Length: 130
Image (cartoon, rainbow, N blue to C red; front, side, top):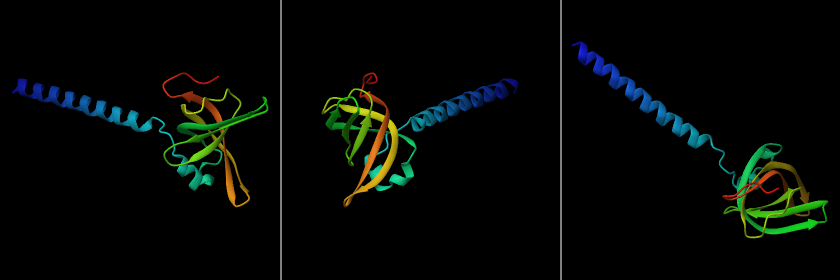
């Protein structure tokens, strides 16, 4: 009987380790920062005002006025938003991940203009843009 009790304890210990490993993997998977869709930001800008979020998409346009003002448009499957940056502008048609904040939402005629101020830009699969 002693051997059977010992075998049960070993099996229970192994099962506990397996469950903990699975739980750790699930936690890691869901805790990684997934990009927020642009549609969510455009639909509910007040929920994101001042909060740091990550968006990801394709650069569709870029504009720089000397060194003073640089911005680009980022488009995902749900919408498009203007991103203001102090860094080098990413290439048009490149896919980037941008971490930043909604700085201001203000009306411009019949449209509401949202500005996404970046904190960091990362080309998909590459290092950060400097």
